[in-house]
Length: 356
Image (cartoon, rainbow, N blue to C red):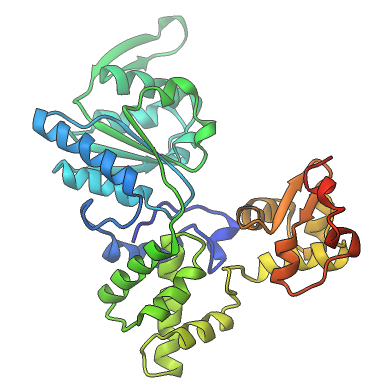
């Protein structure tokens, strides 16, 4: 059960969206692992982080600053809480969008205790003045507070107790190099394999007092898009179905029937994903077609199609982005049970796929 931050995006309204809604936050608080030993998946990250934390404890020092990157729902917030627990330190949680002025950051930093962990979610969305203040705070444990305005303004140095900053981002490329370089440990969170998600589901089912067999867990895991947060959300919806329509026990048949009700298919595609593929295949012959045209065809905003639906479709190899527009792959035709045009079936569409 590894989850992370919330985000005000259309994805938050989808059953297979990786952002956390209020229900997710309430459940996650009870299901989060408390230490690295309980944390499932991300083997390399866990091993490396364990070494960093053990060494810091042996020295009696605060841990190095940590940067965690990766898609929503993979465990960045959970790992930040584990870092604080492993270091036996309190944790302060805030986010980049909440820090719009340098003064906002100065107020937080000046109230930190020695050794405290500051978790800064969506760190790439922090304002530039606050970002520049953070450079000095991370490196020298000091900030300069500006008092007054204009020529009479005075910079008063403020010493900070040693602390550990844990930054989380879904867009690591947007972080300026000076900020990235000040993190002593950086890790990228990968999507989970189905077998790992099955372990997540079994653990969550145990904590939620839900009876589930191996086949039921495998069915849910296969539709979870490689994301623990989605796996746990689907588990709760399948649990509801099992309690109302069956005897409460989750089997493969129950899981499949429940997720059919919620329009999540065998590959984890939902209504929006299938609408995009169906429009691309049926209306435009597999493409290429422009993003705006595709968005109009499915009745969604351009940003919704581009930021919510497309990333998973591209990752699954069902859709390709090319200079000429969006193009369906042979896997998309096969998934929807449709026959591609003769030119694509003969392989003549390869030039479109690679923009040639």
